[in-house]
Amino acid sequence: MPRTLTPVLIAVLLMYLVQQQLASVVGPLAVSFGLPTGQIGLLFSVASVATAVASPLWGLLVDAAGARVVLIAGLALCVAGPAGFAAVVSLGLTESLSTDFAFLLVLFFRGVVFGIGIAAVLVAALAVAGLTTAGVGDRTRAIGFVGAAQGLGVLVGPIIAGALAAGSMTWPVYLAPVLALVAAAVVLVMVKPPVPVVHEPVRVQPVELLPAFGAGLFLYLSFAIAEVVVVFLAADRERIESGAIGGVMLAAGLGLVLAQGVLVPLLKWTPDRLLKIGAPVAVAGYALLATAPSAGVLTLALLVVSLGVGLGVTGFTATASLGVGPQRQGLVAGLVTLASGLTFVVGPMLTGVLYEVEPNAPALVAGAAALIATGLAFVPAGPRVPHSAG
Image (cartoon, rainbow, N blue to C red):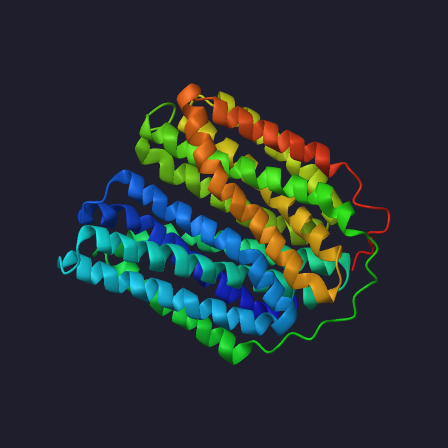
């Protein structure tokens, strides 16, 4: 793994840990502010939209000004967002702010500012992975590590938040800007402008990457639906007790980390093979999810799903990165992040509509999306994609 990538992975890990810490406590804090449930949902929607919209813009800036510039700018926003949120929480709990004004400030700092900032961090990390590796094997492993760092933050964040919240619900809120500041310091000290290695000639046309992007989009959409439907099942106590939801969601995060951080480096499969195998594995997981009679089987189903999705999206991202030269690594990283971000805007809304019709419908639609991804995975990405092991 390139040395330049290591501190960037630390930044990704810390930022997604911060994101999940804040996500874990924002609901209880909002209730203490007297906010209705709909406004809590709006907060997450705004954050997802901000991340999705900002991603391609950050990608263009990476190509124009460099990944280090974007990392520093993004981390500055990631410090400002949680710091502003912590200030609002402090004032809100002392009733120094009206409920409506406090919500608008939370929407701005936690939703918009932090959402835009974390988009920059992920886009820059994917671009660094693309710029500092040349062969197919090295590029795929590096991209897998970026995904694993993201997944590990998602996995560990709620655990840390839960431990801190046992002392006070505000402790995770106050820790968040500190962690973001640590990440910014690591990047400032350790990350130099990445020097692109000699890349193999790009042997695909942009249009030939569309099937891979389609496969990645449908895989992300399926996973967004699956994560939300588990929450619905717990809320309705249908097949899963609310107390068991933590273990089920833990399986989802664990599967992504294992797939991207362990299996991808060990198996050394090409991006094409990762996508062709990962997508069908996800389909099998969704079939199990739709028929699971208990929380235990649901946990297994979500583990299988996340393993398949983790392998598949790593293959998709590596295919996209290998399909462009060093001058466009930022743009393609932005488009990849846009694809994932859009699904986490659409997925929760779609799941809510489908669940009202039939509780099993979201799992079936998620499986259908993964099945479409499987079909797209077998559409050749062009005969000129480099195939060296790297």
